[in-house]
Image 1 (cartoon, one colour):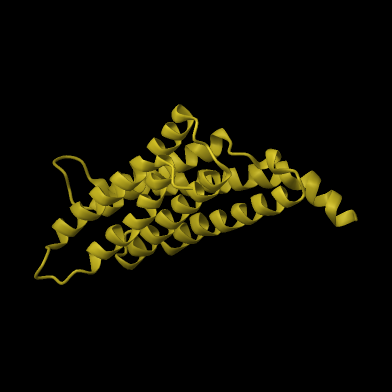
Image 2: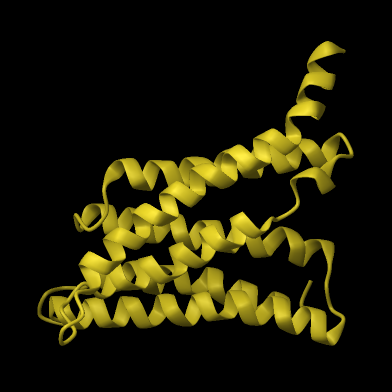
Length: 190
């Protein structure tokens, strides 16, 4: 429970208020551009711990059931909280936020149910799920940063990527539901 990988996951959860809170500081403390930069930096650091804690757990042989539970919870909390901020800042569409957050809730519930019936392997993380996460983890910092960066328009690029992430989100949800469908039908027939 208190292994180094799990501590990194807890640190990611504790960083969520930093990512969100920086956007609610008084105007006299930080300009909007400084808030954008700070929020982006906090998010990128938190997102990096997502990769690093898993790598470290495997390298040190410290994988655990608790870590396997906590890691996706931390990811989902971080993404949902940040999407809520982006929604309030009018940097992401409500439909996109709903698709992403709704999918996370749906698939988490599906995985929990599949685990209870002993069929968790059929909804294990897939390549499309990893691709979805990658698109989100690139799009969100771009949307947080928002300000033009030379010829790069982070808001525009982030918007396109979050739409790609939403499509991948729906695709991955359909994939997991299709994999679980035989177990769903079998339980419905009982």
